[in-house]
Length: 587
Image 1 (cartoon, rainbow, N blue to C red):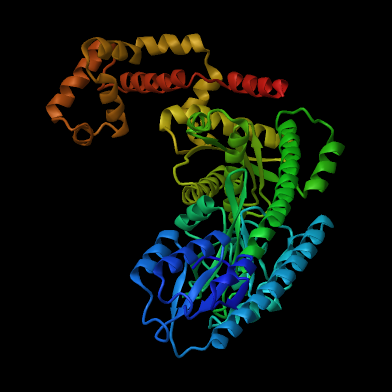
Image 2 (cartoon, rainbow, N blue to C red):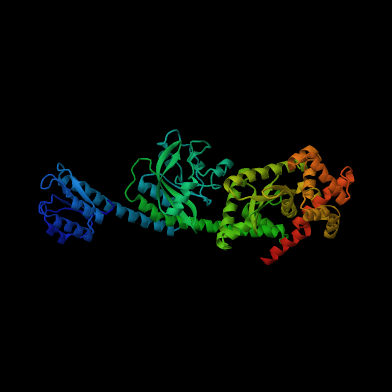
């Protein structure tokens, strides 16, 4: 029965229809119409046209049961027709309904009054804290706001205790109990809590914390665009909740949850959440806009520093104080480049707003994972690349710093794989350098590590500048014509032969060096017989005039393969610097 009831009255004669207004539930014994089915069916049509809520018939006094023809008519009209127990009096029905009607009116008035207050609070800039606190008081239930947008107010940590009933008491003890910050807006003094949106409520990392919404629930909220009843996990138990989505620009940015800890939801709770969501969305949009503007200023300043366009130490010092940075200490520069960014652009049909939203979400995920490693690390965006400046305070030896950098990058890679499944990065890591000039050198090294390392080691990999080895020396010390000449004298001959005869001599040579000259291991990796491998290597010697049994011949062929990789990358140190300068001048 989905028709609203605003009035309840008794009808014993059909003439009462002329005084009806709609939304009435009528109680009757059908005394006046007990012998006239046609009139009874006509009555149903009239009541339906008036918008009445339904007709409740007390049987076994004047009629034994409601005639089937009348039931069929009610079903046809989708009009509620109710058969009452003869032992039930009209007053037993009317009083509870009237009580509900009067209670609903009172709730509506209270809801309107609260929403007026909430609107005034929002317009006065008092923020989401007061709005949510008022919602908790109005509903009688804890309210949590969960969002990936970092919020400013810190939440004191309080342990939840061992029973579900402690949730309400725990939430009342904290200053702003309704807000759950995620991910990096969580506890600033607990790196692990940065990735636990609910650490602010639980105060510990355990299976007893509040669990975030699963992906299926997030998709359902995004599709429904309204509050949905859900069961959520708290301290190992399922809790009935109402969860409302907060959607900005078509993206689910968070949710508002009403935790039904008492089993009873006050009338109007759904309406309250629906009306408050736009106010919360506005507050989140304001926060998001402020963060975006601040991030843009940081990005621009750091780009100017890395490209050498700011030489004034006083200006740099002013910005350091403003942003809480220390650029004079020793840093390792990490650059992340999305491997499939062109595909992402095509997927969004080149729409700049959508592409920027993707980059914003990627940046948010990087910040979240980086904060676990270091709160002092600086994260910024440079065009389509993401920069992380890690402070380094360890042993200054190259080997120690290299090992540390490799471990840090590996942890970042693992964290991003969890947070951004399907998105891969090629990461370039510099050596450690002190001061602003060191940052500039480190940035060039990290970019060069990506540009030279990706063609050699492929995508979704970590390339340390220190690992470039001979590639770095070749790139910095030999002109491109010299590369081409040496390539044509060695590996270029194999490539030409493979293209003409459909052979795999170049790949065979690469596999041979990859297996450190082990014939059996090389044959197994190529799925060929050892004799087949020996024949191929003999053909390599004949074509290139390089003897595999001589160190000089092996050196020339190995060097030729590395030059082939450099030619494939088509990037030199000068080209990298020229590209960075070109990007800056175009902005």
